[in-house]
Amino acid sequence: MLKNTILDAFKRLIEPSIDREIRSDLTEKAEEKAIKVFGSNAKQLLLGAPIKGKTVMGFDPAYRTGCKIAVIDETGKVLDIETVYPTAPQNDVEGAKEKLLKLIKKDKIDMIAIGNGTASRESEMFVADMIKQADREVNYAIVSEARSICIFSFKTCN
Image (tube, rainbow, N blue to C red):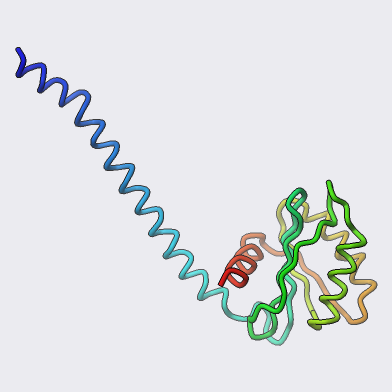
C-alpha cells in the first residue's frame, strides 16, 4: 500500500511539477537566446544609413514619457539624442520646438521619420508646424514605428 501511494504521488504530483519547472526554465532560456539572435540580426540591418546621403531625425512619438529623438547622419552615426514633450500631458510645444529647431540647424537635418504608433497624428501636426520655422528645407514621413524604435534603440544604446 505504501509503494502504491508513493507511485501515485510521483505520477500525479511530483513528475508533472518537475516537468513544468524544467519546461519553464528551458522556455525562458530559449526566449533569451531568440531575443539575442533577433537583436544581432536587426542590428546589422539597422547599422546602415537610413537614407543614403541624408541626415535623419527619428521621432518616436509618445504622450506621458515624451517623444524620443535620435539624429543619425548619412553614414549611420548617432549625432544626438533628445526627449521632448510636445504632447499631453506636458504640452511643452514651444520648448520642444526650440530644441528640435536647434538640432535641425546644428546637425543639418534633411528628413524627419515619425513613428506611426501612439501620438503619431499629434506629432505629425507638431512637426509639420515646426519645420515651417526651420532655416533649411526639411521633409518628414510617417514610418513603421517598429523601424523608428529599432533605429533609436540600437543606435543610441550601442
